[in-house]
Image 1: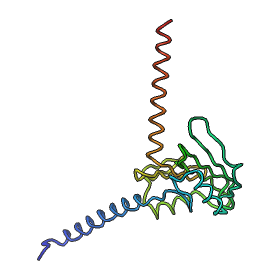
Image 2: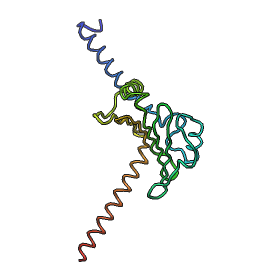
Image 3: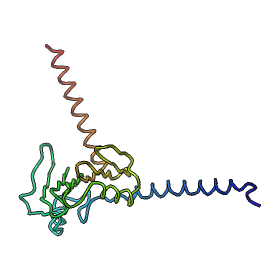
Image 4: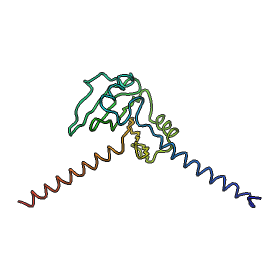
Length: 183
C-alpha cells in the first residue's frame, strides 16, 4: 500500500492541486496580449495607422489624429472610439508603438466586468489597489485603471525611456550643482 494513512492521500491531492494552480496562473500571465484587436505593441506608426483604419471600433479619422510629442522621435495618435471606447491613445517612440491606452465608455461596460474577464483569462493581477490592477509577464504590462481605462505597455521600451530620463535628470542636477559651486 502506497499510503499508510488516509490523510496522506488528501495532503498529496491538495499539494498537486496547489502546484497545478500556481503553474496555470503563471502560464496565463505569460500569455498576456500585446495589444488590442489588430493594433499591437511594436508596430510602426504607418502599420498602426493601417490597423486603426481597418478597425471601426477605434474611430480613426486619418492623419489629423497624429501629433508629435515633446522630445525626440515621439508620436501620439489619438482616436475617438466607438461604442466601448471613449478615446484611445497610441504612443510611439522611435517609430515603435510602446503604449496603448484605451479609455472605455462606462455607459457600455463596467470596471468589474473587465476585471473579472482579465482575471479569468490571465490569472490574478500581480498588483491590486483601489486605483488599478496590473498584470505583467516581463514583456507586456497590462493595467486596468479606474475610472475605466485599459493600458498595454512594452516593458522594455518603457524601462529604457525611464532610465534615459533618469540619466538626463542626473546630468541636469550635476550641471546645476556645478553652476551653484561656481558662484
